[in-house]
Length: 294
Image (cartoon, rainbow, N blue to C red):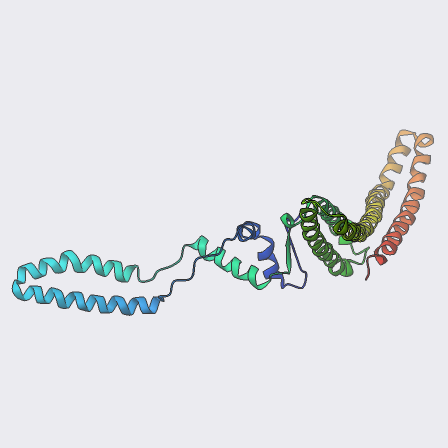
């Protein structure tokens, strides 16, 4: 099951980054915020470094005026190390990991509300989302979908939209359900209980509505699974039929015609039945797909 569900309306590159950002999301949930960027830029740093170098040379020259050998010695001992520090390390780069996390943090803030972390769901909602994602994976990874026997273009649009909508609704349901349980656990007066009970039923009916969506996905996936079995079997029969003449030659040479001919003839009938079964399965899958349309 994907740890992060992203709104399919998010651009693909950003969606990929969000989908891989679970650890940063968890840190943000615990209140983590990256440190502010350094206020000094590389250009300002180099200007400051140049000014500091000139001032140092001025100081060294002043000391050198008192004693040339002493001034030269101080220039070597202090000037060269300072030049290395200032110009070889002429910037103050952030750690690569910190820079990456800052970039992810900014993206997550920008797309707030357009992604769902599975940790945001309670146990019941998490199970429903897992069922929906399993059904979607069954369809999208099937060979009948890859071969274009299903409406693969609509699948590519509709199924991610269904996953996002289910995840979004379950996240809202989980948040409200958690708050409701916390309130009820404190003990209710009869007056408040009279109000709380209908609200609890509203939560239950909302979960039933999401469950209906998930079950529609599962029915679609079940029909796709049937079509997948028929597709595989039909391909195997076609492979056997392609070698039929080799079997015929062999049984003719061995005199085993009375045993093999009925089996060979059945290949043609099996192929026809599997073709019909595949068509029925694909038709049923298309019919089930209609229930997913808004």
